[in-house]
Length: 211
Image 1 (cartoon, rainbow, N blue to C red):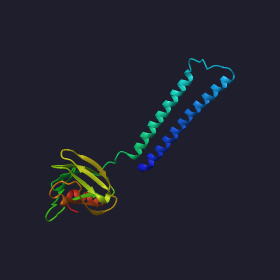
Image 2: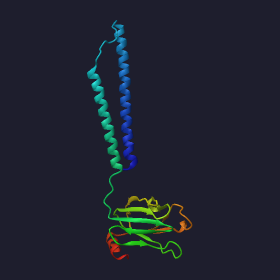
Image 3: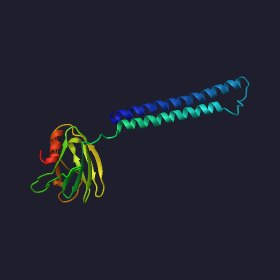
Image 4: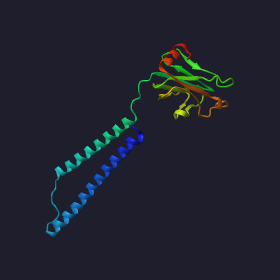
C-alpha cells in the first residue's frame, strides 16, 4: 500500500475517534448540567452518591479498548508501509574510494572495479532484472554517495560504517551513475555504470566475469 494511502486512512480514523470522544464528553457535561437543573427545580439537592464503581470501571474499560485499538491500527499501518524486504538474489558490497568504485559479490570470489579517470574504463555494477539485490555500501577514506538518478536512489558511504539497501531494477538496460558527495579533486569523474541483465546472464557473469 502506498505510504500516503495507509497513513491518510489512519489519520482519518484517529480524527473520527477523537471527535467521537470529544462529542461524548460534551454530551456527558451537557447531560449532567441539564439533570442538575432538573433536580434543583424539583427541590432536590446534589447527588449524595459516594461511589460510582460501575461507571468508573466502564470509563476505564472503554479507555483501555480505545488505546489498544489505536496502538494496533498504528502498528498495522506501519507494517504495511515497511514490510520485511524480500530475500535478495544477490548481495553486493559497494566500496567507494578516492576516486572510484569497487563491487564485490558476496558468496563469490568475484570483484568488479575499473578506472574512473583518464581512459574512463568505468566500473560496472551488474544486477539481475526484476530480482532484489542487497547493496552494502562503505568507504575506505572519505564520505562518498551512490546516486542513481534514474531510479531516485541515493545512499551514503561512510568510512568504517556499512549502509544497506535493497534495490530491484524492473527492466534491462544500462545507466550512468555517480558520486553525489563532494569527496576531493576528482569527485566529478567518480562515475560508474549500472547494468541490469536477465537472471541467467547475471549468473553467467558471476561465473565468468563477462557478459
